[in-house]
Image (cartoon, rainbow, N blue to C red; front, side, top):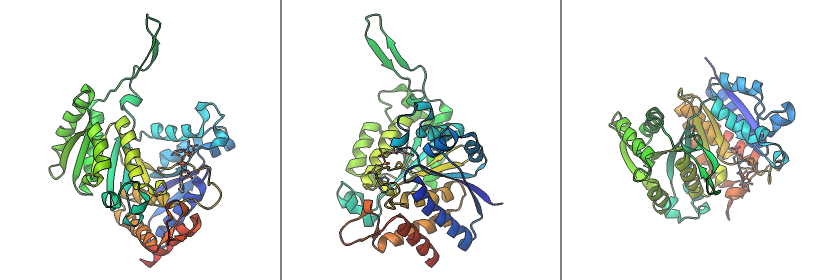
Length: 360
Ligand code: NAD
């Protein structure tokens, strides 16, 4: 039976980059017999303008029915004056919580051809390929009680609660282990078990869960050391798994090791493996509508979608090889351009990937 993919272009450069990713999906469907159907719907500022809400009920319904979702980006200055409840970002957060997308997968991959784009020395980062698995629906961002209270002295005190149930730790560690089985079979669980009881439990549950995966080498690292190691010798990592807040910080740090925001995809998965896939960057209002945006992060998000939600690893590999080939040919959008390379726009880059797919 065909799989249904919901396409949510969103705002700013969203429609431009998603358009190129849809060309790639259409090519796999038409030329390589990938059995998919695509629907499209509004989210973010575009949805607010058309329907008065960043996540209209019709979009949510289609998202629930879909096997996987591809999202461009949401937001922009036009919608910043709106009240928080109807800002474009609420569309994204609403989808994550409504669909219970608890596992955030953030690869940090640096194509050797782009090593010069990193602020770190090329030999430290060339060929970098880390997968950060971040818990997305629990931990200190959601824990109760939370708030700001007034003390008897009159001084105010802010407080949040870091809380994880064993089952929450176990399911995210299983996601990391399953991914490691498809990669280099190493998982580093990041915590602060020397200070925080909650992550002492995290470490205990991670160890227990890891025992079910004898082929995966599980290690543990304190978050402060992990941050240092990411910058010192990032290639030592294969898969990292961590809490919501530690993952938030470490995944941005890892992404920036690559220096090219226009290249990095991401996935957010539920317990059944259904997921929402999107580039890590935003809607880039400064370049929207000018055909300058790099569509590769979105195209590589399609590869993740095929691998993790549609179990089409071979098709995913085709996309990744096609991107590699295009980079080898010297084509570069402005964000990854360097001397001697051929500067191209969004559409040209998307067309080049489609051509490389067909020629493979
Ligand atoms: P941004 O990621 O949109 O842009 C940061 C810089 O990177 C800009 O200079 C932009 O031109 C550049 N850039 C981003 N993507 C690019 C691409 N594909 N190709 C070439 N250059 C690219 O971050 P921002 O400027 O902080 O945010 C802009 C808007 O996006 C805001 O409204 C923000 O809320 C929203 N946002 C949305 C998401 C999302 O939808 N997941 C994520 C982050 C920010």
